[in-house]
Amino acid sequence: MPALPATTAAGTTPVDLVTTGPTTILAAGIDSIPLSDSLAWIAIGVFVVAMVLEWRGAVDPARYLAAGAWVVFGLFWLTMVPHYYLEVKSPIQTLLTLAALPLCAYAGYLLVQGRESLLLLSRAVAFMGLFYLPAETIPVVKTWLIETTAAQTHFGMELLGHSPGIEEGLNGYQSRFAFDSDETVTGRTTYIIMSCTGIGSMAIFGGLIAAVDAPLRRKVVPFALSVGVIWFLNLVRNVFIGLASPWGWFQQDALVYVVTEFMGAPADRTSYIVAHNFIAQSLSIVALLGITYLVVRLLPEVLEPLEDVLYILTGTEYDLTDALGTEARADGGTTAASEPSSGPETER
Image 1 (cartoon, rainbow, N blue to C red):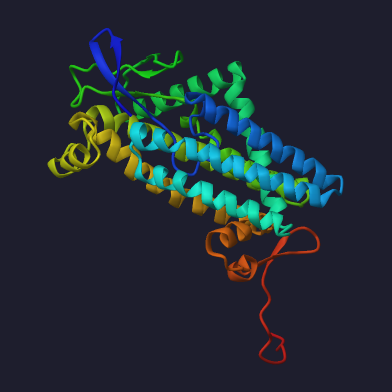
Image 2 (cartoon, rainbow, N blue to C red):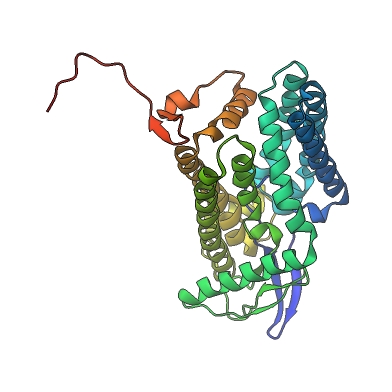
């Protein structure tokens, strides 16, 4: 995205948004594009209605309604392509948003063709939206999330010897790190927006955990674990980007050349783009895969919607329970998958 000037006591300092990683489903800055905002609300609303119909036993109407919701959900992501390509300049997020529409349309097609198991994945998306959209649209909640994240990020910077202070950002929240442009390498700074809070990634796991059929007592631990890990890693990420941008950690000539020649960005924005668009987003994928593994070890029922995700992506049926050697026990716990005995058991 282009540099945004903001006046400080030290003069004019260009600022960047510490935006989210590629795995945040609904935290895509929907407040920036009204059409996207509307499509997100419509999609989640239809998903919720389909979920209610399924619970009431009207499976066929639920399938058709959920199929339509998937198409609208795909259109939502399509409207975000210009934002990620022209403003954020993120190759990863641009490719993901481009792929979203055909994948969502295929999910809708499978539902129409009778793949009822996709109703569980549809239910998960409904819960994700119910987790995220209120936080996005209730002012007091949104303000608290943004400003608390900014304060925690600033505390992390202080632990590393940097104390720029916090002031009002262009979004109207106390979320901008007030580095002096005359003292830093690039003269740039960043400020926190809603998608920097990690709420989108939390909503992903919250939606998956809420959607599956399992006792509530077994859902509490994986939910708390996933939220806690996401919160910590997101804080580390914000501190990393918030310091890399002003202090020019990645202003090496080769990187500057790539950013200016191939991405059309100003040279002084190189450190931000490298830290945010390449390093942080790539590591976000690795981190979420790791969190997913921890969650499925505690709540293997989550594997069922993930198997449908893999089917949509590859067209091949997978048995992740067998692959991971985990299965649900009758008492609601988990156990390693049994292996055939090679002979009579010997007492020791």
